[in-house]
Image 1 (cartoon, rainbow, N blue to C red):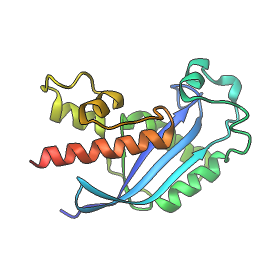
Image 2 (cartoon, rainbow, N blue to C red):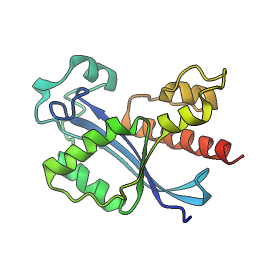
Image 3 (cartoon, rainbow, N blue to C red):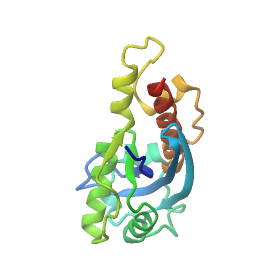
Image 4 (cartoon, helix red, strand yellow):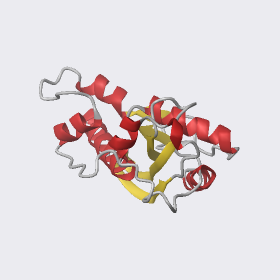
Length: 183
Protein backbone atom coordinates (compact mmCIF):
# COMPACT_ATOMS: atom_id res chain seq x y z
CA UNK A 1 0.00 0.00 0.00
CA UNK A 2 1.38 3.40 -0.97
CA UNK A 3 2.14 5.88 1.77
CA UNK A 4 0.16 9.10 1.55
CA UNK A 5 1.17 12.62 2.51
CA UNK A 6 -0.22 13.63 5.88
CA UNK A 7 -1.48 16.90 7.30
CA UNK A 8 -1.26 17.15 11.07
CA UNK A 9 -3.89 19.55 12.40
CA UNK A 10 -4.78 21.31 15.60
CA UNK A 11 -7.25 24.12 16.24
CA UNK A 12 -7.72 26.33 19.25
CA UNK A 13 -11.32 27.44 19.64
CA UNK A 14 -13.63 29.69 21.63
CA UNK A 15 -15.42 26.65 23.06
CA UNK A 16 -16.48 23.06 22.42
CA UNK A 17 -19.51 23.57 20.12
CA UNK A 18 -18.51 23.85 16.43
CA UNK A 19 -21.81 25.57 15.58
CA UNK A 20 -21.68 28.19 18.35
CA UNK A 21 -17.92 28.57 18.82
CA UNK A 22 -15.12 29.50 16.43
CA UNK A 23 -11.56 28.66 15.47
CA UNK A 24 -9.14 31.27 16.84
CA UNK A 25 -5.91 29.51 15.89
CA UNK A 26 -4.99 26.96 13.25
CA UNK A 27 -1.81 24.90 13.22
CA UNK A 28 -0.94 22.46 10.46
CA UNK A 29 2.10 20.54 9.29
CA UNK A 30 2.11 18.84 5.92
CA UNK A 31 4.55 15.92 5.96
CA UNK A 32 5.81 13.34 3.51
CA UNK A 33 6.59 9.83 4.79
CA UNK A 34 10.17 8.79 4.11
CA UNK A 35 9.75 5.04 3.68
CA UNK A 36 7.38 4.74 6.64
CA UNK A 37 4.97 6.79 8.74
CA UNK A 38 7.57 6.64 11.51
CA UNK A 39 9.94 8.82 9.48
CA UNK A 40 8.32 12.06 8.31
CA UNK A 41 9.72 15.02 6.39
CA UNK A 42 8.01 18.37 6.97
CA UNK A 43 6.97 20.08 3.74
CA UNK A 44 4.89 23.01 5.06
CA UNK A 45 3.97 24.53 8.40
CA UNK A 46 0.96 26.76 8.90
CA UNK A 47 0.42 28.85 12.01
CA UNK A 48 -2.44 31.33 11.81
CA UNK A 49 -4.37 33.30 14.35
CA UNK A 50 -7.98 33.56 13.16
CA UNK A 51 -10.11 36.61 13.97
CA UNK A 52 -13.30 35.52 15.74
CA UNK A 53 -16.49 37.13 14.46
CA UNK A 54 -18.60 36.35 17.54
CA UNK A 55 -16.27 36.68 20.51
CA UNK A 56 -19.31 37.38 22.71
CA UNK A 57 -20.28 33.69 22.28
CA UNK A 58 -16.90 32.49 23.55
CA UNK A 59 -16.51 30.34 26.64
CA UNK A 60 -14.21 32.31 29.01
CA UNK A 61 -12.55 29.05 30.11
CA UNK A 62 -11.65 28.15 26.53
CA UNK A 63 -10.15 31.60 25.95
CA UNK A 64 -8.10 31.25 29.14
CA UNK A 65 -6.74 27.83 28.09
CA UNK A 66 -5.69 28.90 24.62
CA UNK A 67 -4.37 32.31 25.70
CA UNK A 68 -6.71 34.46 23.61
CA UNK A 69 -5.90 38.14 23.96
CA UNK A 70 -7.67 40.66 21.73
CA UNK A 71 -4.46 42.67 21.25
CA UNK A 72 -2.56 39.61 19.98
CA UNK A 73 -5.36 38.87 17.51
CA UNK A 74 -5.53 42.44 16.15
CA UNK A 75 -3.94 41.44 12.83
CA UNK A 76 -5.35 37.90 12.73
CA UNK A 77 -6.47 36.30 9.47
CA UNK A 78 -10.06 35.80 8.44
CA UNK A 79 -11.42 32.26 8.62
CA UNK A 80 -11.62 32.24 4.83
CA UNK A 81 -7.91 33.14 4.51
CA UNK A 82 -6.98 30.37 6.94
CA UNK A 83 -9.03 27.77 5.07
CA UNK A 84 -7.62 28.85 1.69
CA UNK A 85 -4.08 28.49 3.03
CA UNK A 86 -4.86 25.05 4.47
CA UNK A 87 -6.45 23.86 1.22
CA UNK A 88 -3.55 25.11 -0.87
CA UNK A 89 -0.89 23.38 1.24
CA UNK A 90 -2.70 20.17 2.27
CA UNK A 91 -4.06 19.02 -1.11
CA UNK A 92 -4.55 15.23 -1.20
CA UNK A 93 -3.09 14.74 2.30
CA UNK A 94 -4.78 12.56 4.93
CA UNK A 95 -5.58 14.31 8.21
CA UNK A 96 -3.93 13.34 11.49
CA UNK A 97 -5.00 14.91 14.79
CA UNK A 98 -5.23 14.08 18.46
CA UNK A 99 -8.96 13.57 19.00
CA UNK A 100 -9.57 14.13 15.30
CA UNK A 101 -13.35 14.28 15.76
CA UNK A 102 -13.04 17.56 17.68
CA UNK A 103 -10.65 19.28 15.26
CA UNK A 104 -12.48 17.98 12.20
CA UNK A 105 -15.85 19.20 13.49
CA UNK A 106 -14.45 22.75 13.46
CA UNK A 107 -12.44 22.38 10.23
CA UNK A 108 -15.35 20.78 8.36
CA UNK A 109 -17.69 23.51 9.52
CA UNK A 110 -15.15 26.18 8.53
CA UNK A 111 -15.03 24.76 5.00
CA UNK A 112 -18.83 24.83 4.83
CA UNK A 113 -19.17 28.35 6.24
CA UNK A 114 -16.46 29.88 4.04
CA UNK A 115 -17.26 27.97 0.86
CA UNK A 116 -13.55 27.13 0.45
CA UNK A 117 -13.04 23.76 -1.22
CA UNK A 118 -11.66 21.00 1.01
CA UNK A 119 -8.82 19.52 -1.06
CA UNK A 120 -7.66 17.01 1.56
CA UNK A 121 -8.04 13.26 1.25
CA UNK A 122 -11.01 11.83 3.12
CA UNK A 123 -8.99 9.43 5.34
CA UNK A 124 -8.32 10.61 8.88
CA UNK A 125 -6.04 9.21 11.57
CA UNK A 126 -6.69 9.80 15.26
CA UNK A 127 -3.66 9.57 17.55
CA UNK A 128 -6.00 9.12 20.52
CA UNK A 129 -7.55 6.00 18.96
CA UNK A 130 -4.19 4.67 17.79
CA UNK A 131 -2.79 5.12 21.31
CA UNK A 132 -5.75 3.28 22.81
CA UNK A 133 -5.25 0.34 20.45
CA UNK A 134 -1.48 0.24 20.81
CA UNK A 135 -0.81 1.25 24.41
CA UNK A 136 -3.91 0.75 26.57
CA UNK A 137 -2.37 -2.12 28.55
CA UNK A 138 0.98 -0.44 29.16
CA UNK A 139 1.19 0.42 32.89
CA UNK A 140 3.70 3.22 32.11
CA UNK A 141 1.04 5.22 30.23
CA UNK A 142 -0.85 7.44 32.67
CA UNK A 143 -3.55 8.70 30.27
CA UNK A 144 -4.31 9.11 26.58
CA UNK A 145 -4.24 12.91 26.47
CA UNK A 146 -1.69 14.58 24.21
CA UNK A 147 0.17 15.63 27.35
CA UNK A 148 0.12 12.04 28.65
CA UNK A 149 1.44 10.66 25.36
CA UNK A 150 4.15 13.32 25.20
CA UNK A 151 5.27 12.33 28.70
CA UNK A 152 5.20 8.64 27.75
CA UNK A 153 7.44 9.23 24.71
CA UNK A 154 9.64 11.90 26.31
CA UNK A 155 8.41 14.65 23.97
CA UNK A 156 8.58 18.21 25.26
CA UNK A 157 5.64 20.46 24.32
CA UNK A 158 6.59 23.80 25.88
CA UNK A 159 3.70 25.76 24.38
CA UNK A 160 0.83 23.34 24.97
CA UNK A 161 -2.58 24.65 23.87
CA UNK A 162 -1.13 26.67 21.03
CA UNK A 163 -2.07 25.22 17.68
CA UNK A 164 1.32 24.77 16.04
CA UNK A 165 3.03 23.48 19.19
CA UNK A 166 0.29 20.89 19.69
CA UNK A 167 0.51 19.98 16.00
CA UNK A 168 4.25 19.41 16.29
CA UNK A 169 3.72 17.29 19.40
CA UNK A 170 1.01 15.26 17.65
CA UNK A 171 3.32 14.62 14.69
CA UNK A 172 6.09 13.39 17.00
CA UNK A 173 3.69 11.17 18.97
CA UNK A 174 2.28 9.73 15.72
CA UNK A 175 5.78 8.94 14.39
CA UNK A 176 6.73 7.24 17.68
CA UNK A 177 3.56 5.13 17.65
CA UNK A 178 4.17 4.13 14.03
CA UNK A 179 7.72 3.04 14.88
CA UNK A 180 6.43 1.11 17.91
CA UNK A 181 3.61 -0.50 15.95
CA UNK A 182 6.01 -1.63 13.22
CA UNK A 183 8.31 -3.43 15.65
